[in-house]
Figure 1 (cartoon, rainbow, N blue to C red):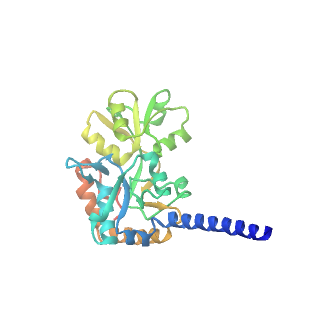
Figure 2: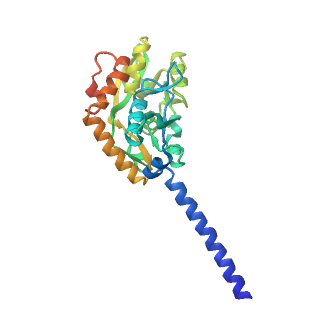
Figure 3: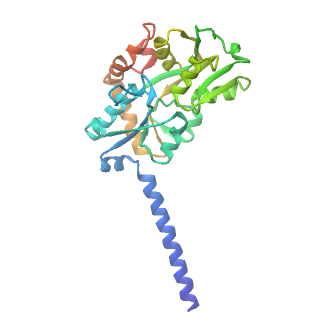
Length: 275
């Protein structure tokens, strides 16, 4: 009897372990290439408040450069851009949404950095970017001028990480949403705002009282689609897709349709997209 009890308990434990492992496998496979095809839907994370890259337009629809590319990805993968489901994210939540399978692909204007590459997989890039600083009348033209002043950034962005690491003496005022960040600059709650220079070029055109006094800080970076770490099949498919969209001129087409109207004439396509 004692032996039978031990055997029963052992089998029960193994059964629970097997169930748990199966559950883990299910979670891990939720956003694989095959599972996306089976559910016939591609879930993509984008911004809702970062024009011209990802935003909600006057018709209440997702719009922007990132969105246009994501729709084409969905069309090429599933045959219909209408099968793309967009999930709005904040900058600080992008990694968590991928790790928890809330999205299949993250395309919320995601800068590829060494730190993020340790935790996520990035496909081939579709856009070039670096950090910039905008201020009233472009008064801030050098980082040294920010000593003793307040710099506004978005939480979880490249600007947040960069200034926290390299310039700890500069006071940072952080917000979750882009709308809050730019409102704080216009209200005078900070002396300058650091963000992707491509966004600042577009914003300053619409707000001529503010100019991008520092157009590039640090290294040039790239924007790329990101997937959950280890999602190899989806990553390989995306790499081939990004090559295709670059070679057939789609990225350039998307630039002229979604970005060029927001930029001044001195910003050229080759400065922004991969051709």
